[in-house]
Image 1: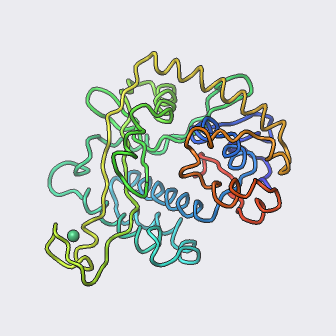
Image 2: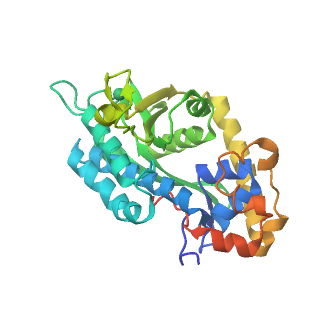
Image 3: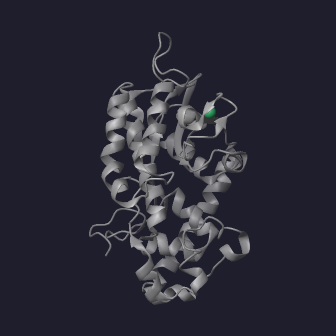
Length: 324
Ligand SMILES: [Zn+2]
């Protein structure tokens, strides 16, 4: 059941239809994917682990930047969101096991410790405490709002920048290539320029890899000349990507497309209002490649989207970026 007084993505109890960057992305990929996730609030257990680990990573950095660089506060915030759930629900040898991801977070904090020099070591921007986790809800079209939260709006060069933290299984060229033109970054830039009366230059992606830390007790690591069990945590990986800029024309075109997409999405969500309707929705993903990596490919679409199986195989987890 959807929470009452819903103000997250989807049709709100106030009659406003709300979308965020992830919902627009899903909608542009596949109607079935978008509808299951955002009209029905359904997800898989595996996806829930990735989602919650990501939320915990965001909470950790929020606490860290708000407390002026207190890594202990950051790590505590991470555990508060993730530890109890992951201990119960994630296998100990999984990349998203609590122990594994908390090592990565600790290493991230250690790498950005102040050592004499700048306030936050190895970060290109200057944090402004009141611009940490900036929520926005802006009118996209009549009755349709665009919602989201900007992780960080720090100073950079002669202006400000959006910093978007992303956790991913692997930071590789295939993953990073998406940010060059990603509508999500355009969304945040457009929103940021309305949230603060400052020059906002572009977007940095603050990427943290939640990959499995190697721990083989017998194999030798060539990089560190030790057994993997000894150097494992040195393999934790993160990277600041960008600055990604968006020319004015690209933002205007993004806006037009976002309005059209959200309008169509609202109409389809209103029309398909019971789980049996799932079989009438398009499956664009089968044509455009987005079934790769889609949480519903296995257990839903490959079984013919059978309503009773969908409800049995998926868990409810409504998406509200303002509360994530
Ligand atoms: Zn090594």
